[in-house]
Length: 309
Ligand SMILES: CC(C)=CCC/C(C)=C/CC/C(C)=C/CC/C(C)=C/[C@@H]1[C@@H](COP(=O)(O)OP(=O)(O)O)[C@]1(C)CC/C=C(\C)CC/C=C(\C)CCC=C(C)C
Ligand SMILES: Nc1ncnc2c1ncn2[C@@H]1O[C@H](COP(=O)(O)OP(=O)(O)OP(=O)(O)O)[C@@H](O)[C@H]1O
Ligand SMILES: [Mn+2]
Image (cartoon, rainbow, N blue to C red):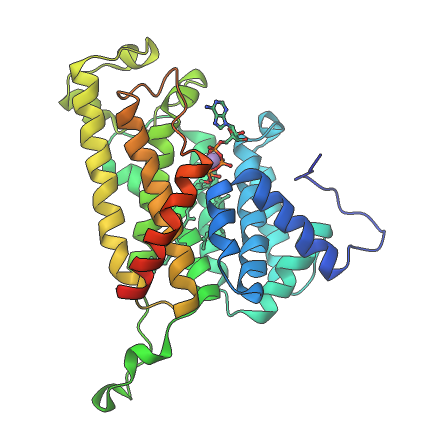
């Protein structure tokens, strides 16, 4: 049984190897898609992504996990203080050891980590979003931030800037594209989990969109699947596709050894949208997931995209 919550104690912390190994196991257990993506990366980068994954997962679990009923503003303040300690090079528990090492190896900025904690704070206070603009801020905080963190680890291809007249230019920074991919993933995640979230009284779909399609909150809680719902879902799915599209050009700026992993994660996570359509938009009674074999079949396509673009 993997444990995500740990209390600091006076005992000796895990070794670096043990800590990274636990991060690997947790990533493998919690996210088949992203774990698969990391398996395609060189060792040093994949280990760093596992360490970041675990910190993100632990942050998410404060709000979504089994202990979440005990999470308050203060819990998140403590978690932010814990984060500062990590950035000062001080691990407080076994899982921190890998992240502190990662922070020493890669020039990660603390801001996206803080922003993610603020995203979780939004979940503490609200269960509705009036407009897409409000939802987009939430998506940036809980997922766009992951794009920013991951980009630092994956690195930028120095060859992108090799023309003589460009030599004085700084390396390009595909931050917007990285954020767009995070938002696309989060929108997908929201669509997949509509039923589950409704059971917790949560609606992430912007209320302005529900209104536009003349579909009420009560319809959603009653799991009504009709033409209004299908049209509303098509609209949401199209929006997510647009974010995936705007992320694509950023991948060719990344270090070549990161392109296949990111294309794979993009294609596989995006496929969840296709499965929702195949399930006739029933996100209430069926969980949209991409079967293992179908995932494997996508990998050559991702490799091709990574090579040609
Ligand atoms: C292959 C690769 C680089 C992956 C990055 C893996 C990573 C560090 C993921 C962290 C995920 C995490 C636990 C975030 C906490 C908040 C949260 C839960 C966000 C949702 C993830 C869903 O994960 P999952 O399907 O396991 O969720 P369930 O528990 O099943 O509900 C999110 C949907 C956000 C994921 C966002 C990303 C992975 C960012 C993607 C962007 C990049 C990798 C940047 C690429 C760069 C350019 C230039 C395009
Ligand atoms: N149809 C399903 N019904 C119920 N539970 C499922 C179903 N499909 C998957 N699960 C379980 O739900 C959890 C999350 O499923 P999911 O398909 O999202 O896998 P994942 O590991 O999170 O991968 P991904 O990164 O692709 O989201 C997994 O533990 C999985 O065993
Ligand atoms: Mn998942």
